[in-house]
Length: 104
Image 1 (cartoon, rainbow, N blue to C red):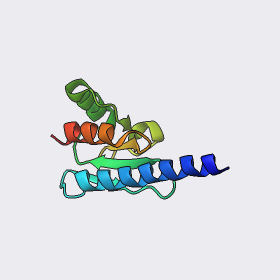
Image 2 (cartoon, rainbow, N blue to C red; image 1 turned 90 degrees about the vertical axis):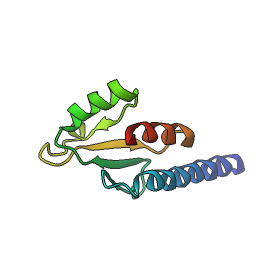
Image 3 (cartoon, rainbow, N blue to C red; image 1 turned 30 degrees about the vertical axis):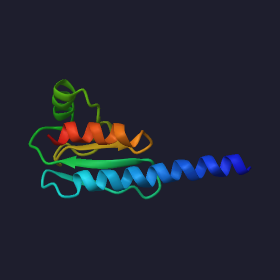
């Protein structure tokens, strides 16, 4: 049981750390918005654009190699600015590298 608690504590620390990292990178941007998770390991991010999330997904992937999950996959209305889902369960350095590429 103690080993399980240590693993859980480590995972939660990584999750909280990654949430703060995303907020730091995207929080001061006029181009991005985000919804902080309320208990899951995924975060919704919004990129202000006239393109659909599918169009923007393709453009971001082809230009940066970064894969964001398009909001249209989760039935987000196409009339809204494009929303994407990112996971906070990855390594913080990977998240920072990917978001920095998208942000540029």
